[in-house]
Image (cartoon, rainbow, N blue to C red; front, side, top):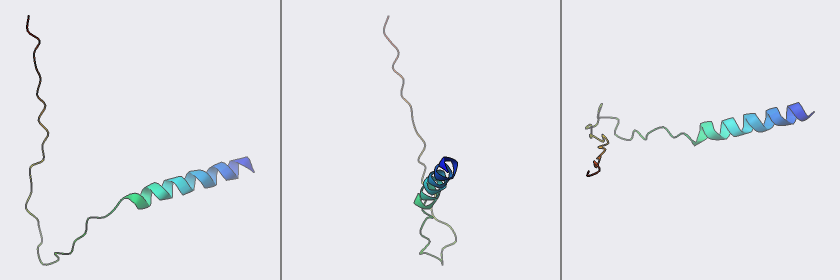
Length: 50
């Protein structure tokens, strides 16, 4: 009985996570592509002065 309860909780949790993922809205069906915006991350490192 406890195993079934744990399984039901696990499945419910997994389904909730799955349905939280949203597919991007594709209202512009005429345009086959969108302009790519560069969103690369830049990491700045400061060297300690000796």
